[in-house]
Amino acid sequence: MASQAREGGPGGDAPGVDKIRDLLFGNQMQDYDRRFSKLEERFLQRFKDVESETKRNLETYESNAKKQVDSLATQLRNEKDARAEADKEIDRNLRDQNQALEKQVRALSDQLSELEREFADRMSRSDHLLREEIKQKNESAQMLMEKIFSDLSNVKTDRNLLAGLFVEVAKCLNQDPVGSKGNSERGWKVS
Image (cartoon, rainbow, N blue to C red; front, side, top):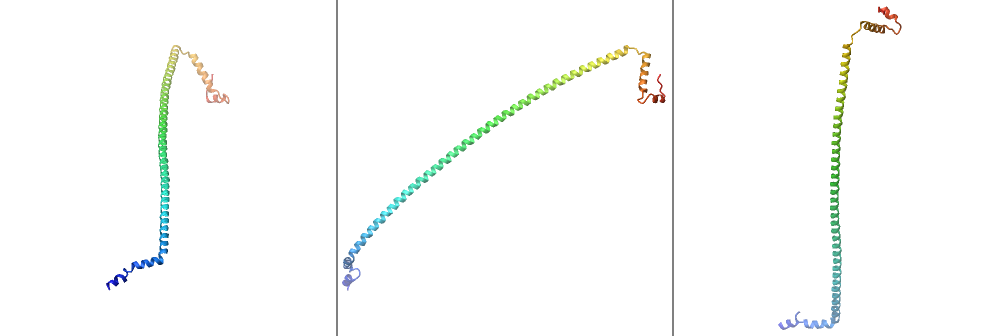
């Protein structure tokens, strides 16, 4: 039974079955093997083509991305440099304007000081001239009063002249615009 099991068992009849199978399906199997190998070659070739195309696309994409990043970095550097230069220019302009403004303020301050000095000098001269003029007029008035007093003290008053003066004053007082009748009624008599 053991010999039968070796020959008749599933593992024992393999060389015979393979031969039968080769005879029946051999050509088809070889055809299938050739087709599968061609299909496998085409698949591998297509896979290699897709892989190389993908690699080329990735390299192109990486190159383009790198160029764009480099371009953006250059633009950013240029913009940063331009802004830094603009800031420096603004600082220079502000400094220049500040210096010009300080010069103008100094010039105006100097002009104001000069005007104050001139005004003080004019006021001092005017004050001095006015004091001199007042002094001269005071001296002149004093001299005139002294002369009048000396003339008055040197002249003796004449009684007849003084009486005539009083008469004239009385006449002037007695004159009435309506007439001299009203004054004589009051009791004033003109002689």
